[in-house]
Amino acid sequence: MGAMNQTIIDYYRCPANVGDLRLAGGLSNDPGYFRFGSGTICYGNSASGFRSQQVSSSLYDVLADVRTGDGGVRLPMDPDEIIENLRFERYWRSGNGTGGRLAHHPWLRSLYYWLRPFLPVDVRKHLQRVHLNDWRNIPFPHWPVDRTVERILDRLLVLSMKAQEIQKAPFVWFWPEGARSCAIMTHDVEHLAGRRFCSQLMDLDDSVAIKSSFEIVPERRYPVPDALLEEIRSRGFEINIHDLNHDGRLFSSHKHFLHAVERINAYARQYGARGFRSGGLYRNQAWYDALEFFYDMSVPSIGHLEPQRGGCCSVMPFFIGKILELPLTMVEDYSLFHIMRDYSINLWKEQLATVMANHGLASFIVHPDYIIEQRARRVYQTLLEHLARMRDERGIWIALPRDVDRWWRERSQMRIVGDEGTWQIEGAGKERARLAFATLVDDELTFAIEGPNDPTWSRSAERVSE
Image (cartoon, rainbow, N blue to C red; front, side, top):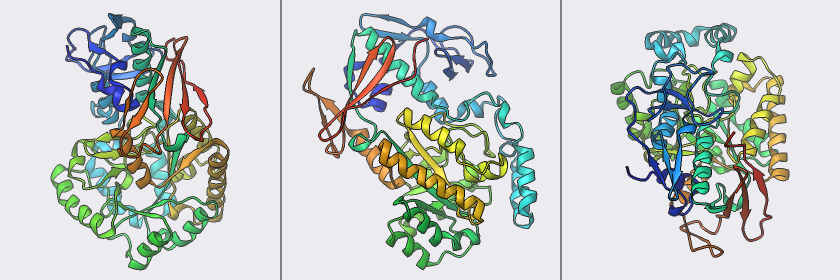
């Protein structure tokens, strides 16, 4: 069986000899759920134990079947398959009952979007609450933050380091100039009222020196004046494409998708947009190769409160073919205000704290349409002020999506060269990169960053071997 080291290398950008992961035995042909250590749920095939069709407390733990020897790790699963199943949400597509009802009935979704312009807002909110009323009972992904993919990768690195008796492994830190984590603010402009509020929203963002991206619906919803696009660009904000007409049908069939994508790609060229987000976060990652964008922002980490359930179970960017995915990791403002009926930033603060503690990407959607009224606007202003404090006090990098895309692409081509004591980073953008070390302490990883003019700091990772 061939080595499966690339999974670790792609994530950490560490030397190729850090891990020797190999498959132990033949995989099953009945994919299902199992565990890879306490609290880490996987979906796919395995070479040991049994697989369940539902998430339960009695899932088989394949970690007990991992074997080490001769400096290598023999795994009863293929980590590439498992991680891709999570990122592509194949566990949801398997029909295990975690998907949203609207997503499974295209005709019902089409009827709703046809009626939507005629429905009062209070009626829409009521229908959505009814549709999503079971969200607290969904066992997987884990609410309110799920980082299953990163937990798997952390565990693989721990196993590899223990097998090779390595205490310290170099890698390229996740964010430029030693930033502890990253945040992006995005604004999906859904209606004419929201479009008219964009200038004031830019004023709000500028009040705390935060630049954001505006996702524009190019057809039917509202006119898109050149003056608005020029104002967004000239003020240092970003323009991205938001679906085609936001009718909920973009992914209704592959034929319809390909037809619509021709116009979507044309609008991207016209607007100079590098990023895309679908309406309602409907998605099918297997079709993304038709999109002519650098990055996508349509995949939630947790889809409990979205019309299409599921989630990629990650708080880090990842590639889907040539497209970089910037997953949505924070609850949407509409869901917070109108589904959960929470007019505070408490949940956002909780999610942000967890993402920051695990060096992830905190990505927000705040619609101009839904913060026009004073109560919601005050909540958003409080969020902006909190983010500004985290930037100043905790070193979070608040960036435009296009800047995150450029950095992550550069980092994906960097490599560590040298030997013990003389490690260096090579590749375009290396001047912004920082050398980091993962240290193994009692089956835990701690991370430390080194670099010119940057204080070294360390973080205790969550325990990866219980």
